[in-house]
Length: 220
Image (cartoon, rainbow, N blue to C red):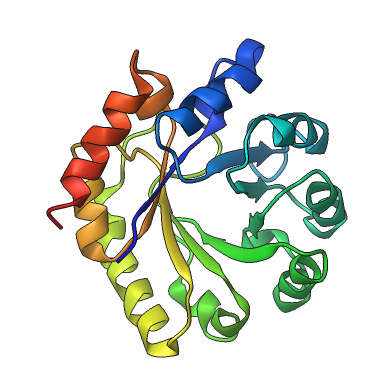
C-alpha cells in the first residue's frame, strides 16, 4: 500500500503561508490539506478560494481541499478554478450528494466524501463508485489540535473493506489528531492518507516529523 502524508495548513503560520507550504513540500509531504470552514456548518472561519489560488504557485503538490461549508455547490467551481486537485465535502452539507460529486468531477477535480465520527458508513452505499477519496474524521470538525478519537478505528477498517470490495483506486484518508505515535494504528486499520496539522506545523523540524511518521508506517 502507498502511504501519503498531507500537512494541514490549518496549523501553519498564516503570516508566512507560502513559505510554510514550500517548507513542508521540501520536507517530504505528498499533498497539502486545505481546510475550509464557514462559521456555519462548523463553528470556525478559515480561508477561501483566494488563498487557495495564492498558494497554488508555491507548490506542485496536489491541493486537497476539505470543504466544511454549507451549502457546498456554489464553492466547487471557485476552488476548482483556484487550483484544487481534490475537493471533499460532508454529505450533511449537500442537498443532493450524488449531484455534488458529479459537479466536482465536471470541474476537473477528484471528488471526496467526508464522514464525521457519528456519520454512518451507509452514506457510501450509493456514492462510493463515484468517489476518488473517502475521508474519515477522527475528530469532530471545526478546530485543529484535537485529540484522536480511537473509536473511529473500526470505522476506518470497515471503510477499507468497502473500498477493496469495490475494486477501485479510492484513497482512504483520516483527519484529526494524527501524529507519529498513532499513525500506524490508523494505517493498520486501513487508512493510506494521513492529514496532520499541529503534529507537523507545531514542530521545529517538519522533515524530522514526516520522516518519523514514514518510519512508523514502514513497519505496518
